[in-house]
Image (tube, rainbow, N blue to C red):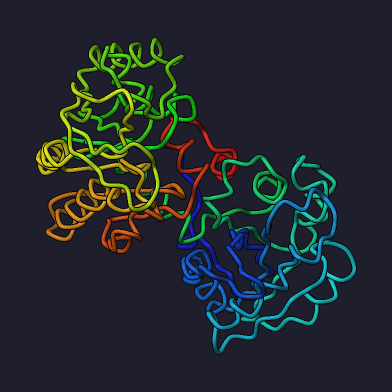
Length: 398
């Protein structure tokens, strides 16, 4: 992996530092309902402030399509950020470029923190317009990327800005890169991966990449049904992409050549409908009734998966194994999540997980803080696992 500059290489005192973070947080009314992304970027903001920088925050919020929309103003996130940065001088500018931004920056003292308005209120952000990037660059002396979750986007505040100013990886971005590199590019073996979710088609590149890099791959969720169907098993009326059966067989062939073992469930938790209150049955995978849906891996499968995971030194997790939102179809996900957390806490393994549904599933299991690393990213995490070069990271390495 190419090198990039970190904050250890940076003397921030007296400098105007543009910090790209991800404040695209969920809200209900005027309240931020999940402050995880705010919390994770605090170490970078606090370190730069303590070093005497003028800390200038750039972020997107929602998808306003290049125009001002009051419900997507970063002013709505300001109270939550101020609460998180209690004791720091935190202010807001109603534009991210131009006279308003410059006037607010000119009033800053060393150590102050300023949030500029949503960069996506300008159409130049998402089309990576060099003129817009230049306007942003005029506001700072240096650039810090602390938004791994936005680094798969070739946007002006992520890529072009990094090439216009002396650029550094923030503490969160550095931690994400080190964690993912240690899990996938330079892992301790054996390496096991869990990939769940509804569709093979949405994770095709991920599966093709992982089978070449891991020692075994557990496939769960709706995509497991597609693989079961491809193996000639009856899956009743389970969710599946039957048209992807040949693709599933091709992935299995690549895995065989790469000496990666693919693990599918051998028993299943089934019901006639995916609704609360259904009475589930546990059935051998070869005996699925025509009117039943596979909604989770069964206890025999879960125990087998856990035994394999116990042999690992590295575990990568993306996606739940069943319909975890509705009990009792959450049991395999919850059980394996607790097992991986236990192995991690015992210092036996490195565990890395990411993706929106994955974070929700591990939170549901009560172990979201017990993995070695839980990525804040969704699309960026997935693209990294697919083996793609992320534009925001490449820009730091130029």
